[in-house]
Length: 481
Image 1: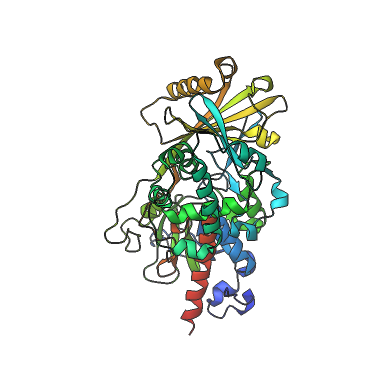
Image 2 (image 1 turned 60 degrees about the vertical axis):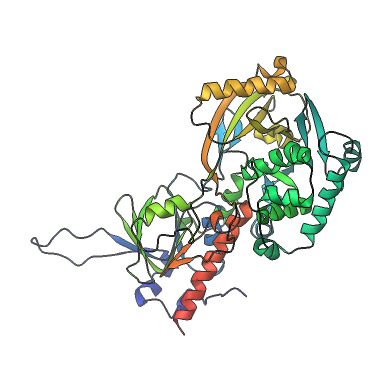
């Protein structure tokens, strides 16, 4: 059962100074007056009971948990908005998510934290259309699109046995709890699929582009734990987009927090603890913030390493493990005239040909018309990898050429490019061996959260934020014993 602290007036383990300032969220400690011969006073120090660094999903989840327990906090975000990697830009009347992102409604932690009705979630077709041998072939969920699934039994995207194995895999993952899945024995996803008995054509034409697009990992080296988790969520829920863009998810979480608890454009450059349970945080502008209960770092692992550079708390991989390169992606957006849209269905297109650079694409306005003006459609195209040695113009030309082979040059050549996103850190690399239940505490009063601490999903980020707060509260309670 989560530990709930008493109201702020009875926080017996806080200093009298901190108790007297809870209603103000954080405050300034005045320095003693100095004579003319005294050295320059140190930077102004502010305090807060808990400091959370990073307002992505993990940091927002941590702040949400603190707020629900009436524990004041200060949430610091280096950029100009919340969300981290989960943000949406408004460009020429279109909503452009920063990279290919889909929200699965069955995420268990998300169901506890988010109001789905307010998000106005718009559903994808439960399946995909796969480009192979110059044609599109449908793969459909038989429980949601039974007639489509019957028609697909004879297509070249796997055998009838492969489709039976998908049904058996569904039964297998549904029989396990999420906790059992996260702690199960693991192999790579590709090895799991081979062990189950899927054919090479099924793996290459469906699993590589579909799950490779989810994990940004076409080799399917990602842990089987994550495959089983996502497969179960897909079996229980829908693939969706919020009507106002994927960034509406963090926006909803932030809107429920006290207005004076969030500080944007506040870049943290270091965290120092001096073996105390009350670490201090230094901002880029030189300002120093002191925590009373602890600091929660909700930033990417590379940022953690930089902020804690030279400190003994800086996390390192377990013995025998190397640091794994992050997963990266490129996402290109195009404006399309409505009469040039080849389909009207809210379906995901996958490249099952084994050729070309495109992994998947879809028309976002087919899923959520609010993603674009009424007379235009929005095409989203995703590549796996960063393509660092290819210029934007060359990459765009190659994508247009490839899509012309899919839909016809007469339709595609009129598409107008809107923006290209190159995302170097799209997800942490979670190939085996993994620990998806990492201890958030890395030093006195210092805690980590982020999807690299759990699973590389929206849900994993949310879970990690809650766990970091629970660890902090447990440690502070034990300190009183």
